[in-house]
Length: 294
Image (cartoon, rainbow, N blue to C red; front, side):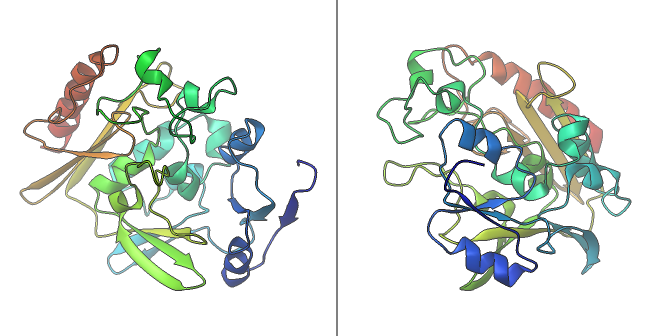
């Protein structure tokens, strides 16, 4: 732990929220992303609030669906019989990262992780998303970046986000001010000059749970990475069918998880000079996911 950083391990959610309301506080669950952010100087928390004893883990039935605690590990999610009817979610959890990281990485952490763009993560650059003036990817190497134009062309790396969104998930967010519930894709926002966060969280807010409605008739998750284990998705697509409605959601193609038109998955995603190949991959994965839920 860096010198001068305080550490707390609250025994309940109310105590955790009180601590997270303090200036410079950061939530710590699995820590697989936060540790890297701190190491690279992307975040300099004054207080680490360890959520492992705050009662935010677990999977239980709720209103015909299931509720996933934000501190539930990816490994537990992948193996849960309650999650099995949501095939896309179970598949996404089982394919994320590596077995070691799945044992400690959490639902909330996977959803809220920062971009893996090497210009954002690297210590050599101060990129636009990190508060600088330039998106270095647009003038440099962006082979693995997004297809959507904008001030930042980073690609969102979450495996869980497209799978949960396709299955109709909502996110429960808590703070000392109260609780709100929003559709999963509304957890994200495109960054602006005034606010470069990719998350639509207010100060002091914490993702505490994800709620899934009754399982879809069928769902599927398809992803492509550079290797099978310990690889963030280059492109990932989830599809879920309920009656005559099919939802299609992707990661790896824009700043944030992106809902797709099943009739034209690449619509609005023209690509950039080096990343246009991702359009072909996106269409191929979308076709496979849609075929699996037909």
